Image (cartoon, rainbow, N blue to C red; front, side, top):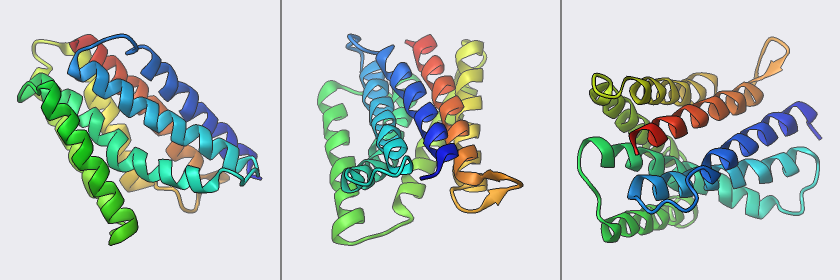
Length: 195
């Protein structure tokens, strides 16, 4: 049992699910993309908080959702920003992309493991968010700032902080969870302001 990590993962879960809930009932592709992406991340973090509380009954489901959040949840956030800035995505294309991302997750996690895949696909998604936010900034300053801050925090959490070790007395995984929670809130606000 790791109480600090239980609390940080619970915080990430609650923030992500709150942000997802704000997109409920909206039918636009970016809103649905945000709903699914934040919900997957929130469920994953919720299962993580149960794991770090010392309850290991759901560990297999937890591990599945951790991978799913990195390989499908995060790319869906990038897809929402892509839709706003680069090219509108039809409903058929949206579901096709979701299906492809899910199959790639299964392939690179279970059939032919490639541990760096989630980092690469998540990084691509966050670069799309960052570039999209910079392009949108002149016309939508608030949305642009939220997207820039969210993507930078996401990249900082994933590539600089990580989940191993500690910074002083604080576990890096706890810093990671808190930064992701703040990033998710910012990204959600960016998507909401652009919708």
